[in-house]
Image 1: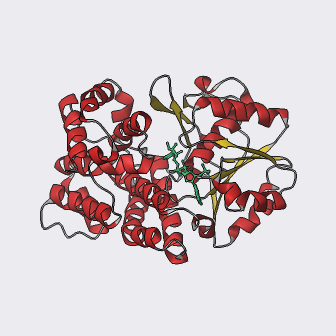
Image 2: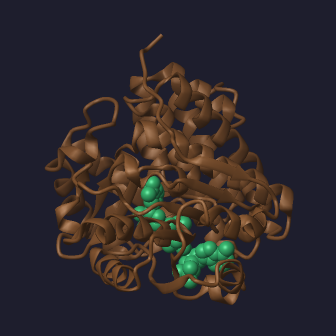
Length: 379
Ligand code: NAP
């Protein structure tokens, strides 16, 4: 068996109704929390009021947009320091949770995000974070990453570090029932992508394998139901658990070329993070099947496919069936990506070894361009 380290220090509290324990949890870490959340949903769903009722001393920062960049985190950190907050509540999807992580470092250490892109580049421990995910997607509540959009470079960059694991992930499936269909679908596909990528990452280990396969099996079974029946608490429960478990897997394995390539579709063409990844799964996993056919067959089996067609075709069928059930076109051209940009994206990826570091095989620049072309055409 492959040797491995498994480090996941976040305490996970998973229960329907656990949002009502937020006040009790945050008092373990500080007296004056800084609530980092998105612009609309936490207020509209009443979660922000419920958080404030449990933690009346809290200061609210509700300015985080989707796919946040360094500037908003720097603004938030300045407000957090000025208000002398000593802990953070990250309330929302991956965007507010990732912004909260960067704020937790900046508020404790000063400087700008630029100082911390990379791994463990801070001196003072980050402020402690209690994360309450309201989407079932990124798993950011159990990962050591804060992924930010650098508009100047036109790409996403990551701050990573052991301190970025939230101290507590408070998981209440009820708070995810308000997600509209398109958010449920996109975030659920992100979780699927993370589970699939974790299983094929060169850093996959015996623990991440179990987590990744379990996540994929649950998502294939429950995501269509969560999308069709938003109030279905069984489906929401399974999806929140699956997304967190997929997050635990990528916390160890990192993501692979799917995420590396998907970022360009998001940053340049505004395609939601989860959909961008999903469009690339079939081309890249057919390639993965050439390099790890046995693992691909085990993954396809977890996703309900019996492998009759051979590894590549089987895993591609599993992805296409999922997208069809969710009524998502597998073709990037249907999501507004012009064919003329593909060669340029492929060139960028090929010149950035970071995007390829967890990817099995050594895809050439031509192969990477072919993945984009296949995703564009929906193959
Ligand atoms: P998101 O960008 O956080 O949220 C998407 C949309 O859903 C927003 O409009 C948000 O509204 C709304 N929303 C969230 N929860 C809702 C709810 N319960 N009810 C109604 N609306 C709700 O989406 P996400 O996919 O969870 O996060 C994507 C980000 O995570 C990306 O920036 C990506 O790079 C990052 N990511 C991080 C990791 C990691 O390990 N750190 C891994 C993968 C991805 P509001 O904005 O008004 O709240």
